[in-house]
Image 1 (cartoon, rainbow, N blue to C red):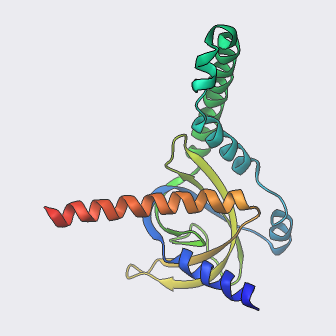
Image 2 (cartoon, rainbow, N blue to C red):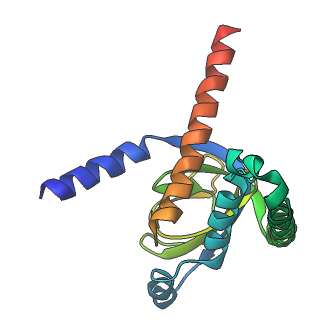
Length: 196
């Protein structure tokens, strides 16, 4: 019982971190059968983005390599070449995917999103949300979730709330890192605006 209460409190605290952003997005309705299948499959794009992020963040020329530069120069150059090839390939894939995504406003939290959808949905329907986070390198995430609520904006457009169903910890962590980073950026900007 205490574990469930703690998980609920953590979930609620993560929802407190929300950011308004504009990014390339596509939403697609899923059947309940597709949703059940996708719930147990980690998307290749998510794995690729995660691997790319970890490759970029590693310092190839760390002190260990520098200490033995003459003997390991060949290996370092091979690694650099492999990384560059991977980046070029990923960039090409991301550009191709971005052409299918439309830049739209989104309100994003660590547990879900709110946006004007491309399709009509009913409460409880499963949905797939593909979005490209503005990170270096760009991170394409393909998340699944359920429509939790539907409202009308002042313009009459439908506005939906989606709760994400994460398929692994890395998927959840990638989104949380992005939201926390964007939240800090918006706090800094607001502080600068208040000072001027």
